[in-house]
Length: 554
Image (cartoon, rainbow, N blue to C red; front, side, top):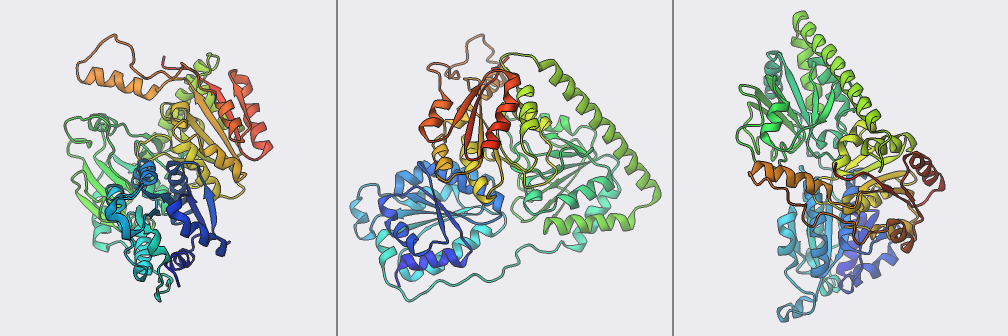
């Protein structure tokens, strides 16, 4: 059999149902082989970055390994930014690119380059298949590494002649691999001991909790110890119910601000995340002085990676949290339980005050024109179906988004990890493919949307039920905020304008762009018209776009 058939059989053996890609000449063997594998759907994109972005969100939403087919060196280059985001999001992916015939690579044919070297910095493993005899081995290793915690993308270059070589090495199905260990009893007991001695515990949660289904176990632990639950600065999933009395906001992006947020805590428990992703340098630790720091992770890599900790445990998150909760239940007394109950009562009161403050801010901003960000998010939340998947890349509107939308489960929210913009519009494709038939709301800023606007064509082509809401303030608002911070931090204060951060001239027409790619759209500039427009878009089915004029930097 030929190398291409071993490749396709490997996909089948690993349960692959979708390939996200942009076709090219060096991918001819793969494209030609698809006709013999009708169970594998090719989700076609107009740009490699869009294909990678969609695949990353598909992997995160479906809990499956995504497969991507890119086109040789420039195509791989087009996808590098989104591969970086996928790496930061711990999305399990096998990314391939066609390579030129190896017999002429030394002559540097058109579009050729060292593909494995290009992809290596943003993947867990990067390689090129040298001979058809090793195709099965390479593919098995690629899927294994992509799914070894922490998950992430791998890259495999596929030379066109190797795909056509003959081999007797057929693809083999992977065995059952139980990767996540049970928690170490001694480690759990040490965690328990530290928690029993805490008077003001605090929890910070990452995406791994939602990804591993450990949210209920975390809720039980937070309630037992009476701890507030904070989120990573950028979150891709809902790892704790947003309406729960213990739920708080995302942590800031510099150590000093994080330390201020945690002020008063004598114990900080980190669970399932990259702690912390900073934007600005600040001296000192992100933890309060003398606070005990504990960490629970699914793999050893993130454990104590950035900051010193007092106790760390590696284990399957749900099992570890349950074991810790059981240990606490077995060792607590009435005095300790009473103190924890009082902390829970205080957290409920604080939550009520926070919700009241949000309602006040919303009321104050209700009648502003152009439409205020709090009003936009409130209208979106009121009109979006309760079963909709929400893909969010609103950036400077994210605080209002988090206040307006309620997430009780881990399968409704998909946020943009990594910090590279343009993920939302592309990611909505992957989310919709992962949840066939479920409505999807994609919320994106106008600047972000332009990085992957070609994804609208894919949504129309595959008849995906996505409502794209583009928030148009005609500026890179986040850059203006960050320039203000930079000028203050580096004593570069000035009254100069914001350079290259306005997008108003010429004005972009998202309704017109959408129409050109087969997606009907409407423009909304009055707040009262937004909720009806959202409801109508969802009722219509298929892909729809709503361009919303919102206020700029105030």
